[in-house]
Length: 104
Image (tube, rainbow, N blue to C red; front, side, top):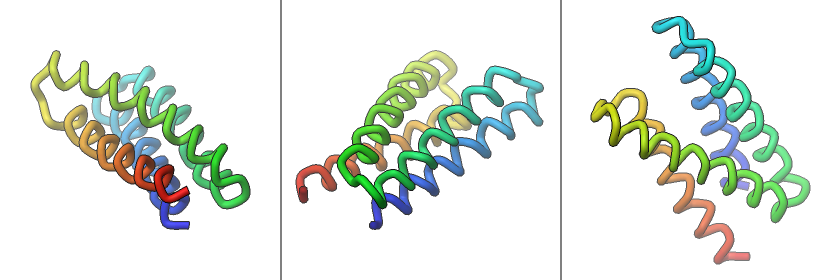
């Protein structure tokens, strides 16, 4: 249950990050990617309530993609916000999901 709630909260943060990217920099790619990934993560969180394995796999794939993207972005820009923050949240989520898979 905790993983489902965590994934939903993580998705909301990703969604809000996309909105903030649009508001602050007028970045349409941030808005689109933030909305797409955020909604997909929220959906995978809700899916975890019904079909734990499939919801966790979906969350894992989405989180891996965000981890790679924001890792590259942090290396390129060197700025903690927003790349480092999303990378940190993504890494925490990966650890939690990994622990969830180990528990079965």
